[in-house]
Image 1 (cartoon, chains in turn cyan, yellow, blue, red):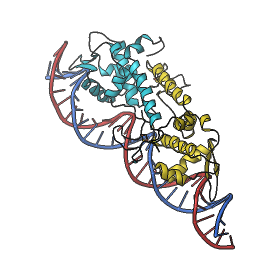
Image 2: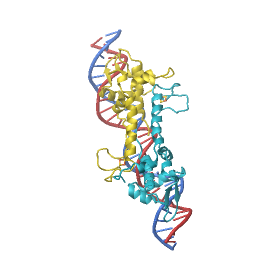
Image 3: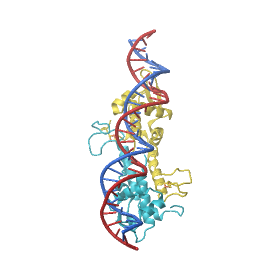
Image 4: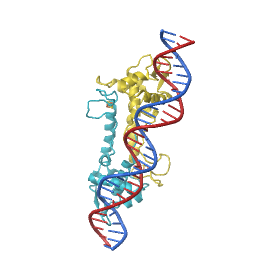
Length: 141
Length: 141
DNA sequence: ATATACCCGACTATTTTAGTCAAGTATATT
DNA sequence: AATATACTTGACTAAAATAGTCGGGTATAT
Ligand code: FES
Ligand code: FES
């Protein structure tokens, strides 16, 4: 089970946005430089964050992005969903009556994975961007 | 975050082994048919399970595999580690002093991912194969 | 005018996962 | 002894997912 760069970058970039938050928009160029993430990749990520109303953009010179609500109101789960980083532990489709191997009953491990998925999503639901800012030590970027 | 087929199959196959447990070894062919997993793929998986002392093998006709200890003593974490399905949430290497972007300090999200990794591994440590057998309903294979 | 910076879709390269193949060895049964 | 079963091993291939790039836009402050 791995967390993708895309998901990690999205949270990193938003945390950066929250940390350096002012009334002025922050450009992706700045975030790219501070966090060491490719600018082009960031653009792709922020389009999704914008579509999902997590950030608002300002175009043109001195443009950039700002959080659309308070950092403490943005859950990690929300961010990861926005960039299509979903948790998927089962091999079957949730709704269908078929199991992961095409049989008509669920496999013996199905409930375990279901529980796992819940366990992980729970974690993401409980944490928000604000937690990252206030809980951080000085030795981080 | 996705769980791979390999990891899922490994647990499924071992649960099958635990469920149909007798004094006689159980062949991969049987597991393959019951669980709908490719025989050739199962072979690959069981070599690793064997190397990690989770199962013991019997060669030749009427051969097959048996669990190496009681199902209740085999943790899911153990199984997943055996087939190289490790949990990896951070982008940096754990020991090095460098962050995930090559900088000399950890990024602001590092602790979050660390906690997440712990959270997931905790789950895998608490569950064992025995839980799957006793907790199952009749409507599973 | 011009430079900055968001916008957008398509594209490519890399890595990982999933699964197969070929050629073997050990053992029970006939 | 011959045969069929079934584990053993390493290499190989195909498919999918991830990571990241490219080109050509549009909007806006200076
Ligand atoms: S994971 Fe749902 S049936 Fe196997
Ligand atoms: S994840 Fe460890 S420094 Fe970013």
